[in-house]
Image 1: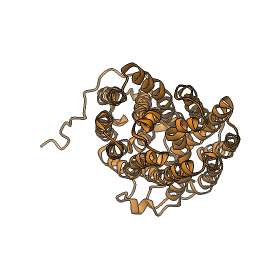
Image 2 (image 1 turned 135 degrees about the vertical axis):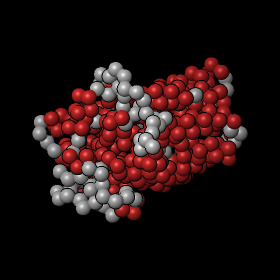
Image 3 (image 1 turned 120 degrees about the vertical axis):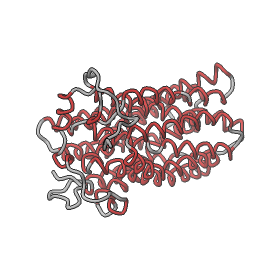
Image 4 (image 1 turned 90 degrees about the vertical axis):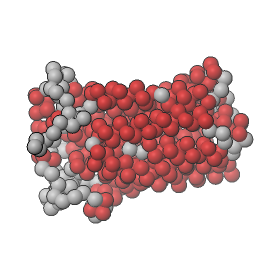
Length: 439
């Protein structure tokens, strides 16, 4: 009997595709764009829905919390799923699921049904970042990994910037919000076709040139060529301070991004700006995030090329841009439209530079076999922080204003930076389990 029977994922070797790893990175980028378009459609239409259904900000917050609950726990669960199934099957499954749910949101009838569909959407979208981080750890050498992470993470800002124009244009053309969810929800099905056609692990890919495979393998830490000793479990991973640094750091830092992604249109409306005017300014923080992703990745890679260690280069970016988010504080004390938009754009630029680093950290510090699981645990920490912040934003903005929220959003990232810098470091001596990498 043949001990290695052909599988559905196997494919005969064909002519190589030059720079294939960047094509794979491009697919991750497009996936994240679609992920965020599906997610942001609700936030863009929120001013319309609040009027139609007579919701308060607290009501809207409960819809966001429903999404966040499922997203929080599926970050960790989805990370484990993708480590077990592999990125090809795992991401195919999750994108199919959340695309179906996004389309079915057109059937929502009120607050309860919106909560239900957003809960399911969160469950489907949760594995995206752990899966993409795992793919980056497998396909890119150490010196290019921050670029790869910047590429796929920038999809969130591009998707967030596209969603207002796409959703608002479709709404104005059709005259109803329901078909908008169908339009945006169908995008994921196109991506799945491309993913299934192009993606295989690098060691098994039929169109990866031998020299590119050698380049990828040569750029990895030597330890990643050896499998960890024993089964990787959450219990085992939670023994490491590096894991807790990623969980706690993201608990503190990620809520800022969801302040932008979920609340920025309503924040501008609270300042007295019309929906159309808000939409025009809505894309600026997302543009800032896109530029920040690549600037943070480029700066880190530049220092690595000049002989800095990976850990030192990542920490320096965090130390520069974490405190830079204090620039957001003036937004709490002005209603000048262009000042508000500019300050949020600059703060989100700084956030995204940090984001590229903390999304890179699991693959810098942990063996590839554990990357999706650790990234998922970090996502769960981020989700818990965002659940708390979402509830507080709804309550505080209804009872007082967005002013204390904006001030907190500028200060807390400084604490997150300290957590990352102090706790998330590679080991100086070999890990007996082979899970945490050495310098």
